[in-house]
Each structure stands twice: as C-alpha cells, then as structure tokens.
Image 1 (tube, rainbow, N blue to C red):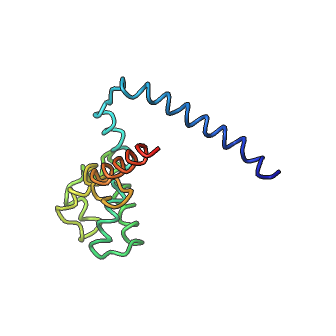
Image 2: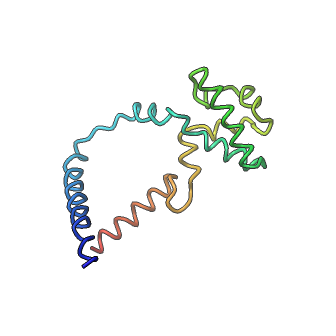
Image 3: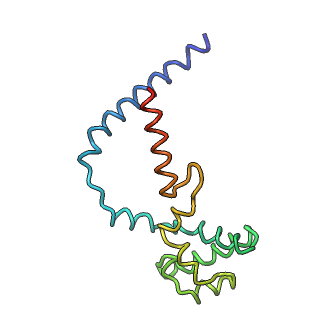
Length: 141
C-alpha cells in the first residue's frame, strides 16, 4: 500500500514534464535571444568571484585565504559599482600579490565558462559533448 502513495506525485511530475516539453517545443523555434541582455545579467552579482578564488588557489594560496581576498575585492568593487574585471591590475594586486596580468583572462564570462572543462562542465566542448550524448539517448528511445 505504501508504494501506491508515491505514484500519484510521480504521475503528476511526468505530466508536468510532458506539458513543459510540449510548451518548449512550440516556443523555442520562435524565440529571439537578447545576448546583450544575457551578458549584462550574467555579469551582475560578481559571477566570476569564484574564478578569482580558484585562480588564487592555483597560485598556491589556501582556499580559506583566497575566499577572504575575494570577499575584500568584491566589497571594493561593489562600493564603486564595478565588476571585478573592471578593476585595474594594481587595484587587484592590492588584495593579493599573487595576482598577475593573466587574471583578466580569468575574470571574463568566457573564461569562467571555459574553465569548467570537465564532464558536466560549462566549457563549450563539454556542452557539445553533453548534447551529443543526450541526442544519442533520444535516438535510442
């Protein structure tokens, strides 16, 4: 009897997913993507702060210290209503001498996305591979 109680929510979920897929199938072909707005939204909220921490860790700084450095850098950028990538090298170096000019490759949205080049990651190569795997699974249904 207990197994029967979980079936109703499961069936509701399946119906919701099916309806959502139907809606998206009709919506996506006519959709226009405003890439400028997407880029603006992606930059909001210091999306590359974790990338700065990862950069410092790769340079040998313990994560706990890197987290503190990033917190100070974000507070400084926020006080001026700027993104981390808009700070000068000297401004960033004031938070850690480990920061070099290559930091600006890290603090871009493209650099952030590309840095996750592992299974399930956001790097374009990984996304293409995931789409390929999903298409292969769909072809086998």
